[in-house]
Amino acid sequence: MPQQIIWITIIVIGLLTFATRLSFIGSTGKLRLAPLLQQALRFVPVAALSALILPDLFLKQGQLALALNNARLLAGIIAIIIAWRTKNVLLTVGTGMISLWLLQALFGLH
Amino acid sequence: MCLYWRYEYKIFRILERRTCRAAYFARGVPFGMIYGVSALGAGIPAGIAQAMSLVVFAGSAQFIIAQLVAAGTPALVVVLTAFIVNIRHMLYSASLARHVQKLGWRWKIVLAYLLTDEAYAVTMQHYQRAEIESDYKHWYFFGAGLTLWTGWQLSTAVGVFLGAQIPASWSLDFASTLTFIALVVPALKDRANTAAALAAGLAALAFVALPLKLSIVAAIFTGIAVGLLMEKRSKKYHAMSEEGEEVCHSKSSG
Image (cartoon, helix red, strand yellow):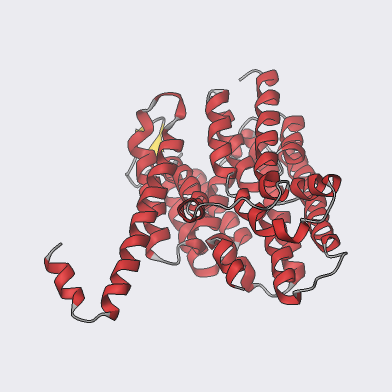
């Protein structure tokens, strides 16, 4: 993407995000969110992040890579276990990166 | 309290447990640094990575935008995806509206700009605990927002600086996926959220052939639909089990 387009993209997203933040604060206070929409919105972060995690772990150049030579998948599984046991962000990211580097360096995986 | 529980969402139910308020503010720092490092690792120019923290100012969306841009996603799809990820701010806006109702529009604009997940969590917790009707209570919101904002900008700058020193062969783009794992895994506390996460992840794999990287948007909607269905089912089940025999009846009838 050309840099100019990236700038425009970011500014548009910034304005849209600001609009959602201002939505109810800026209105007169009579508006309400439909309960179903409230429920749906609670699932957005978990759904969006998972939709990015799985392809990065399971796909290599757009192809499904389920074998044990997939370094990102192995490092990702280690990170999932660390996240589950410790709930610690830095530890999860640190262990995951170190696992990836070790797998790349020791076994030549990528 | 009721109002708070209604609007809060899973990811910061975990945050809320950390009673020390300082932890809220410090918590953003590693994310900002990882964001800066991974954005550069994904090939985003330093200036744009920093500007995104100023203009968008929303952690997870920024990670996602950086990843999508790096993957060559068309601008309109990046905008659409980021918008969907950020609509949840309406929940916070709705929940805080009555507390800032009397303020002038200048205040409302500033506070809206500072309204992030963390600012909402800290401010709302304070308002619930104190239940104060003070003319100055917006200063708490402002103080929390500004502190988080400053931390986010500075930690992004540190991350961008570090990211520029590290060669691309270190695969630092992977740090953003790891951050997502660190956020999602602790949020999978019930069946509905776990089902939503699995459905969205698998859908993203299944839809990978969709043009224009629309797979993420399609996957988010799949995840939401499955999450809502699971929630409805478990509610129905609980309602039924309270009535005793009804459970067997409902099972046999499918």
